[in-house]
Image (cartoon, rainbow, N blue to C red; front, top):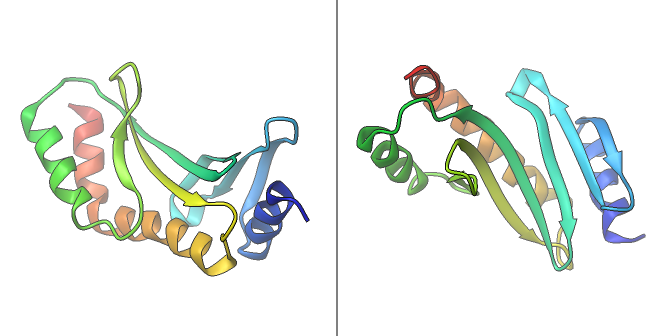
Length: 130
């Protein structure tokens, strides 16, 4: 089984809904809305797996927001807050090694985002509105 099929298999085993897939690009988009996952991109870019979840558009740049996001990065078990190349969007992003990827590792990365939402949701909403 190639890496793309392995990742898809793991996602289905973890009960994520695959809402889009592009086998040529080895990319899937998943949902699990009850855990805060909506249109998350899972991209097999050998030798790594890239996981990205859009969180919010930056309405107004503020040192308070950037400082809070960076401080929270220190507490996140897997992944981190990142800003896109245009500096307009905040995303959650994690990268994993494809060659050694197993179900538990992928689950831990995805669960990390769910835990982050549960504890940091109010801040994310506040930043998305400012």
